[in-house]
Length: 305
Image: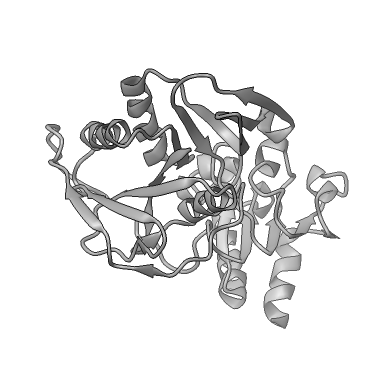
């Protein structure tokens, strides 16, 4: 089955979500090509064994409709039947536009899919990860939004050999642009993630989390409660309405572990939980649990690392 992966760029390379989908497509031996969308000048996204096309757009453009139209044109011209994208802001927007052009409803929160008799069947996560359901697609085109960390990433060597297509800006006038500055390990790719919850009591106490993260070369995350409180930006939220992470070590600091948070980190290889409530749900997932005041435990960790 001819397959298209919609790729994204992070730090001038293909995103981990793109590589995860590519890994799944390779394991199924699908006839795959990638169309990556971004605004970088010369990203390192070329693939030795897979056709890569780069659609370059202006970073001041807010509308994906022209990009989606170009992708739809390629899909129709090359008779592509399966379209895959990671469940991110950009891919959700693009696949929504494309689904209208192709008159086919997309399926979201896909954690697995397979091909039988020319038809795609999917496994989807619902109810905050507590339930799964299966779907079979009968339309001519299958559009899937893949949940991050559902698959192991493909191991590839990236280059700068690819076709570039420039897309005109949208007609929306942009008066100002704010680009969030990112430094240190990122949530999506870090092998160690330290997340903070309400148990940190006050925003100023997050400094001890920053210290611990620096010592462990870890990315910092948080629960929706502290993101809503303005303690850290939304881009650092872990959970059902935030990011899904799958690090080697996940350290939950002052997090009770509601289902909405668990769905974003439950597949971590090793979970360490620090909470003064020994009945906190997070301990059900923890490989190592520390019952104690987070504000006392973390400084001791920092002193001994």
